[in-house]
Image (tube, rainbow, N blue to C red):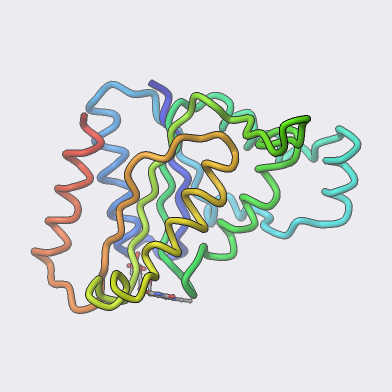
Length: 190
Ligand SMILES: Cc1cc2nc3c(=O)[nH]c(=O)nc-3n(C[C@H](O)[C@H](O)[C@H](O)COP(=O)(O)O)c2cc1C
């Protein structure tokens, strides 16, 4: 299996970074071919510009976008690891989606409406967040996050979504964090 990790966190000491290392290790142990796109390390340009849009609509995809699209085409599984910021994607991840999941690559509009073009791939989302589950679950926020991310981006593009891990971090101690790491390790080893 070809597994692509798209990772975004500016701090190498973050829990997101620990999740990335753990998942990479588990996938390699399983025998997957693994590629990692570390969006901050790449200094990924996350602002969709007018020039990008003209290029996309005229079939002249900017080179840095083409590189990412080729890697997505290569992947069977796409694992996204980023913290929840302001109840959504960090800007660098949002901009990656804006620029890379383009019309004609990720989706198109045909006779039967919108069609996702990335069929046959699976996405897994790993999103630590501050707010405890006791608040985010009953308030409907977890459903909103699932709807706007899993459904609104990946399923819209034809990608089947596997598990979405929500890891509440506020007040967690070392042993709870180790439990989270064990959970992703066991999941991705399979
Ligand atoms: C700019 C910013 C915005 C944040 N917004 C949210 C939020 O909307 N909901 C939430 O639960 N946590 C929010 N947080 C907390 C982070 O999600 C949390 O600190 C992070 O997931 C912890 O994991 P890390 O060590 O990988 O950063 C925010 C943090 C930052 C820096």
